[in-house]
Image (tube, rainbow, N blue to C red; front, top):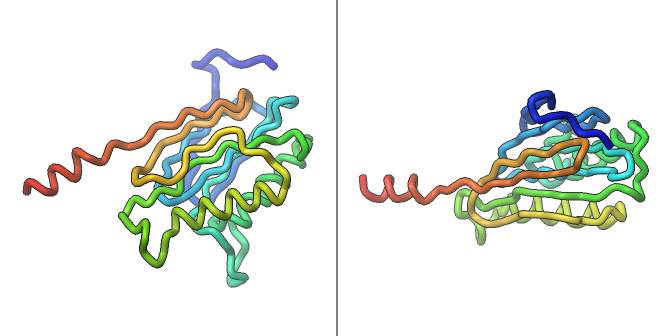
Length: 168
């Protein structure tokens, strides 16, 4: 597997409710709060993809879009298989699912529900999770390299904003 020099790598920002998979080397960046991104990678091919879903399950109304975890994960797997990846070689790294609004015990618990659907669907597909950073109370930024499978993740520091709000 030949990696490009950093300046030659194409960059892409992935918006919520979207997914991307490719054979080329691309650094895909996305911002997560209660949303979850699943990065799937085939190490033998050096090929990967990523999704960014907002809600756990599509309820059957409207179109089945990658806004929903159960749709986004299945569509990403199908897209990677179409690129020549083999399901038994795929590994998962996934991120997000924070309780950014402090609703950890509330009725919605969107972040926790997104985490649960990612865990369940990946297990059902027999895709092992090799890395994850999920839950907590802070959003994060991730950058996924589709060729190397490397993911850089950093949490946002929200304390300064909270302190400023408390003092005003």
